[in-house]
Image (spheres, rainbow, N blue to C red):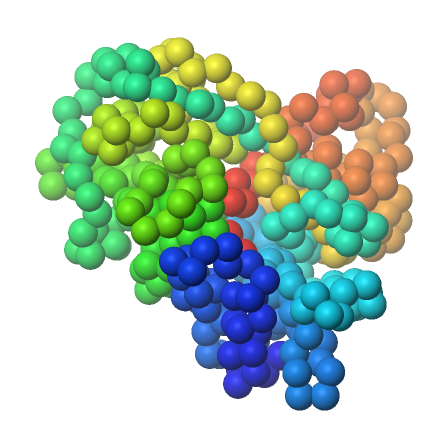
Length: 364
């Protein structure tokens, strides 16, 4: 797709995805896909008419001391009159080739339908989902002695919020300017037809935590319960922000998905009475090149811990003295899932590697 062709992509995406006239245009919600600039997305055309589209956006993930070059796929749509012609499958193959040529190791996909799994995308990672109710507000408030002011985010807070995001163990990298655009776009909140709210915890003039929360508004009819979209900073302060959000917005419940590494906040939610549901990370992931993935993760892996015979394996690792052979799915499981069956059957020489929860601010 060229930048000047994206208007048609917006029109097609709006026609397919918007379920209510009050929903913001996809062009508004997803600036990383549809704004002018270098486009990585692909489309299928019938002469001058765009009939199928696949949004494709590059990201860099920072994970402890490693950096991953990745892409995300979203806003995938085909004109109803052109379905059944395998157009989306052709676009997916074009995106995979693009990712290979770009030096990407992984492609994250906001979906798990057969279009993706037939091509080799897989469920991945691990997370927990909590349902927090008003009865848990006071236990959350009393779980810490921190004295903080909870308030709505102001424009002047942007640099501090960005710094808190950058301090997370695993996350997407962005500039403060990009963060501001994503906060304004409210992509995931708009998709589930909720209104995005950003609350911060302030102590002695400094921000100690933030939470981005999707709550019912006055314009759209919600399709999901109120949901935590993103958080960062001190877990204790974040727990206070969550408690204030439930009370301040009169929420009957707040769904909180947390990546597995967010153990401290998860423990505070459990101590308040919220029981975790174990889930995998959202969507699916395609392994572009296993050798490249291991190279990009090298700062987190002992040298020679995993041997790759080719770009898609097989991969060999020693677990508890036994050499185990893995395919792409096994490698993704061992690397990113703390509950991987390979970890259960043997001790690996490295800890599981955290990933951000993908249905957050950078949702595509």
